[in-house]
Image 1 (cartoon, helix red, strand yellow):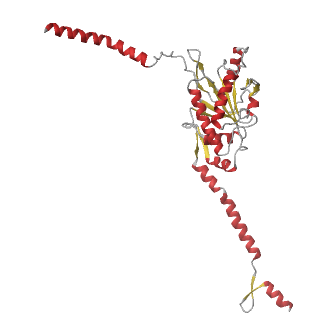
Image 2 (image 1 turned 135 degrees about the horizontal axis):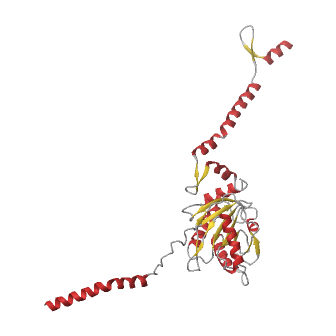
Image 3 (image 1 turned 60 degrees about the vertical axis):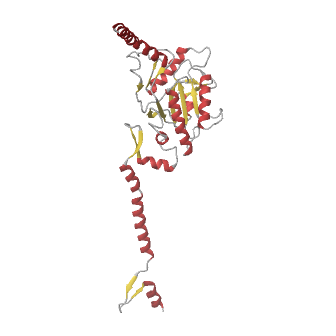
Length: 316
């Protein structure tokens, strides 16, 4: 009896001793083991807003066909949405672009179409990505947006690398120039294959000045309405329908929420705008009526008659 008890106790001790190893095996095979991240990696990633600054308009990148093109050519004198991303990004860039294309479809339903009313420019931050990567990504999002032909302009996917023979250091210099200009701070992942970067889009004026930043993802953090209002502001009211230009008078950009919110005093002021015109119209109508009304005079017998009748009687 004592021997059996001793044997059971030994088995129990062995099981308990091997349990952590077994759990570790399940954990490592069940899902990928996360490597500890170096504390310094990613600490400087973020966005330094540089509102009012002009991006390097004459810097040349390459479009989806491998043709050299400047950022000024892509903006084309229209309000522009600028996105810094990279085409092989496994997660975040795709979520940024997916959210954006959904809001762009909403903009189209309200009458604002990419290429006609505004432009979109996506620039890869990966100096090794070349036009074939850009072309595949672009075609995917054009199909998602409105299934437009590949030859139709409006949404550019650019790379700093033209392809075989490109100096990667030269490509990186172009990317660094645009990233610094807009305050987009990113780092290379310790693996050397991916990038740690913020999720943001920027609104540019037709002259290439930075007008607005929208952070994180659409539609949770910004919507088609926010993009539309920001582009109307960026164009100094030259873009958009009259109703939208009037509506924006009631809204102000809230830096805390990153959205356009209605301001009560602005809304009341807008509603009060017609009031002086109404008062003026009433005064003018009263004056005009007084001019056409007959002037009444009193006769000796106390009865009233108009001046024209008295003149006619005097003639007879």
